[in-house]
Length: 112
Length: 116
Image (cartoon, each protein chain N blue to C red):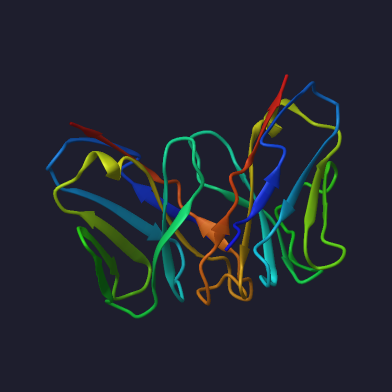
């Protein structure tokens, strides 16, 4: 079945450093979504990418969808303590199914 | 706008007991999902409803889990009998339409289950 993997599993950075998480799918995706989950909280939608090679920015966050639509990345410039949490990518399940399969997540810890 | 409501927030039971979780989605959201999130992992889909019909329940352990959305609004997820490995947070989410990129998922706070 479809698998969505993320690396790294965990990253600890100093405040002000950059951070990147990578998402890889075993199948081509029609679109990809990114979510953030704060410690003890629930996933919150960040963005959706649809087009091959698409790049979107939200303030210090840059999201990219690969040309083959099988991978994606999230880059945070100059991390802040408010960026702490786990970042998940998610793509539609197998062809014909519409619910999202979530990746394993990357947990970000920011040292002040 | 009210968010996705879930109850209870926490539940502790012994193995082989039963438990039920309730979810009320955002008003007007046709699609409702139940996800299971084990500590340190990403959410795993259990079941997807479109209005009151089941769209995807391929990952629902049907020998012990059941879910319903009788009137196409709120939903109940039941586990009977519970096993130790069912300890997790059960997340309910809703979306305006199908989840394949046509809309974001709005999650509730979740129901944390501990099975002893």
